[in-house]
Image (cartoon, rainbow over all chains, first blue to last red):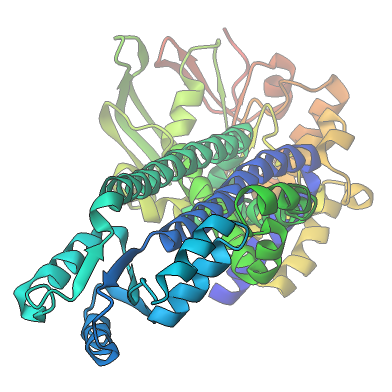
Length: 306
Length: 226
């Protein structure tokens, strides 16, 4: 009995969807716009995330050691740093490597190289390059380095930590990253609500057109769920078809935008992102389309079910 | 047996649609209700359909006090009453066949029953050939015949026909009335409201006359007297 009803409801929903062609088409058009919009938010979020990660990756703190420090001492500090939960990576650069890098950096600067040669000895100390998991954690890491617990500062092996000169930049970056996250989320949330409202109104209009039919079905003795069912099926169909159209539309869009994003955002090609995350985006759009259509239908029909 | 017991309907703006109406309709009767527009005919029928509730008084169908029906009980109650309207009230996106079948589907009838009964009902109203046409492709008389086929498909106890011929020409009007008579002959109670004097006079059945929300006459084998 329930199976028969369900079959009839689905059949009636599909038949109605085809027979009210113009109405269905215009609803799909509006739904497609909505879902295209929601999909764009996914891409925007991906771009933002990627860019922020890139920026975060460029922030680090260098600890320079005096030239007389033993390598074993530095390596033990490195080991202890790596044990800290805030630290994402620590890179050791030996004195010789520092010299190599310095020479490479100044290979066209003859005067500097000459001065270096005259010194005879390597004037550069070894260093540790520390990356935190989050820019806000650098302060804690630096405090750890400077603390007595490490025993390094007291014995005078740390020559310099470049945190203080970077501090203001790191702080600003932290707040920018934090701010963009919040703004991005608020924007996405507001736009998502807006598009949901637009879709809801579209469905409401479709059902308003059918309000007399709802009354007739009730007079003929159909119960509420039998009246409501085909409209929900219709709403789901709008959502699914629109999601498919939006997914197709994203192909040329991401190809076109992809070139720009590769240059501007430093590496991420939005088309590649679309392809590698296709199934995820596919499911998100189909599900939100279907859900949007179904919920809008339930709410809209309720008004006319006396 | 239908029984209206001192039924009144007064709207919020104090306009009176029905006032102290008491009337009994026996099973198998053919009753015509006549009266000017606004006399209260349609309000009376809506109460039987549980579309409106009386301000005071009670409406009974057999032993059921209609007002006490709860939301979930109304659909199955309504399936015992067939209704035909002046404006047909067909589902525009369904064919003649599907319109009739819908009433059976709503009643939870099986596919086999639907496949055997619907063509039969459409034949009865002489629309066998046009079963796959949509309402917009049918004439007024044909649409009304689809509506009648739909109203009787679940073998209701009562058939309510609210101005069924209001939009039809004289020939179609006569055809519709003949069909209603046939349905009544098969045992269904028919309640007809109309403005059409010719129809009432040719029927020779019980006529209830309403004026300003009250019953002014109730004649066995009556005529249209206004």
